[in-house]
Length: 216
Image 1 (cartoon, rainbow, N blue to C red):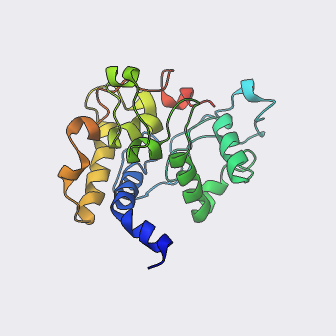
Image 2: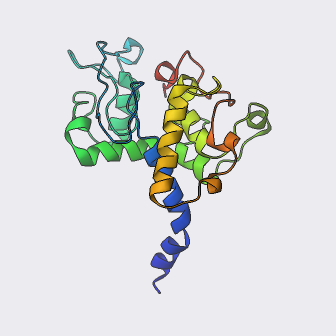
């Protein structure tokens, strides 16, 4: 058998689990979540989300708003769109609407968000889910452990995590379990509740919410 095919097959269970975790996090904004990709942009935003602190690095375009777009949240503000634009070679600073207009780009951005750390010295959602990230003593003290719960911590920070059980977190968890059920994967394989949840994890983000703290 071709070595590449054998390598992929040997990793299939791991890949299968990660796809479910990715799909479980496919949420746009804080609005009521559903089983499907009902929205490809934030529905209730009247703000432009332009931070003039980054006017030299990622200048805002007149009359363009940098609210949430896509299958996974790219996050608000021009600097996050600037980072995505730089990495994906797409002019998202001038045209953030491209994400909602192009299905392939929608998922390119989502996969980029999943694979890329939001801030320096933090892991990506991919790394915390598959276990290549090793928690430090400090992480252990604040209840951060590898698993699905940590993916929510990476992607949403204190918007969702560290508040005990809450609707937003439980809705995302329900998405993940829904996809596991669709693939006939035993829910017990995801680990104990503290791995599945981020209710007791101290968020990585440092501001009042990940949306305001997700600066590069």
